[in-house]
Image 1 (cartoon, one colour):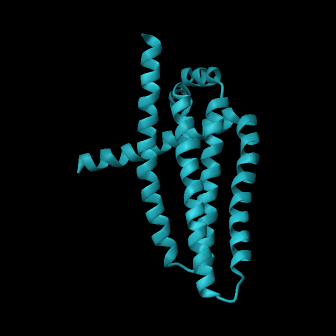
Image 2 (tube, rainbow, N blue to C red):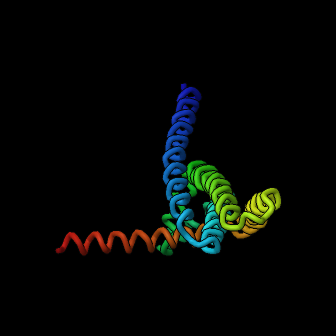
Image 3 (cartoon, rainbow, N blue to C red):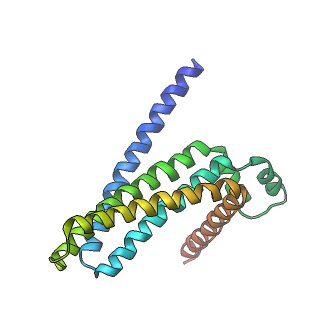
Length: 191
């Protein structure tokens, strides 16, 4: 019976993650397309590079969470090192964190970068009709693929080699964000 519950739990997690991905992809697609259509071409290309960078960044976190060692973070928790408790919580749910970082955010960024690239190709060709359509298409698509694959390839090596350091920085960032959020919440409650 325990095995059956795990299978059901896996399906449930899969459908939940799929639903989250669906709505996030729609939101980010709508946001990026509408934003890029009205801005100068140079800034739109910078936005495209930022989207690719976000995908690579989350891929690094997703790999680091699977490669990190829980033991040192338990010791840090005992010494009350800030951010270590958050890392322990992340490492206890490695599969979900890795799925969120690599599959949800990473794949959404890959999809959105493709859509954004298509919008930029269309805009470039409408602004500069003398440009060769095939050449522009090849350069943009090739650049997106090269930046994504190259970034993720180098990021994987960094993530595996420095997994504990990366996770500590992630934990400290989460800790600081929680402190700022709860501090503001407490300030509003006092008013």
